[in-house]
Structures are given as C-alpha cells and as structure tokens.
Length: 126
Image (cartoon, rainbow, N blue to C red; front, side, top):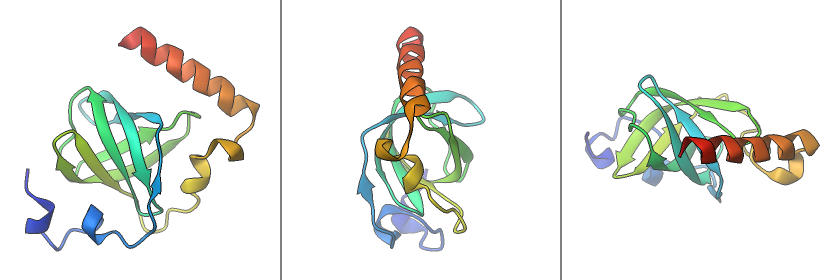
C-alpha cells in the first residue's frame, strides 16, 4: 500500500481535502468486496470520511466500498488512503447532504430505533 504523499494525482487524501471536516464519533459498518467490518467514524466532510477499523478485513486502496450508517442509510465511495487502522474514503463530487445524514438532531424516532437495533446487532456479532 503506497503512501498518499507518493501519488499526488489521486484526490481526497487528508492533506488535500478542501472541504471543512466535522468530527464525528459513531460506529459504522464498512462493506467491501471481502468483508463487512465495524469501524469508528472519526470525521466527515462533503468530499470524504475518515474511519478507524475496529474489526474485519481491511479493504484495499482504491477499492469501492459502502458505509452503513447507524440509521440504516448507505454512503458509497472509494478507499483513497490507508494508514494502519485508519482509512480515508472519498465520495463522488456530486454527493450532497452527507452531513445531514449523520447528525441525530436531523433524524426522527425511526432513526433512534435503528440505532438501538444496530448496537444490539453489533454486540451479538462481537
């Protein structure tokens, strides 16, 4: 796996991100071709997301992945960089309202129910 600094032609690495990053502390599922991994959401912007893998197989750089949020919605992107257990996923440039899908205050009762179900599901699979 190459260093992000070695390939300046590839987009959304941490040091190249121009969108404002918002800290986040949620658990998400990272779906790749080889596995479904539990990951901690560290920060997010309109152009990407930074995760820390908790368990499961690490995806490859430039692999397409889906991120299942607590509310059950999915975000699709590409693994742009990997450093140890941290992974940067870049989103398509036309992605809108990513931040709206992450904040609890924008969600209703169904979101909170799915949060509880998500936590119970992950506790059973640990």
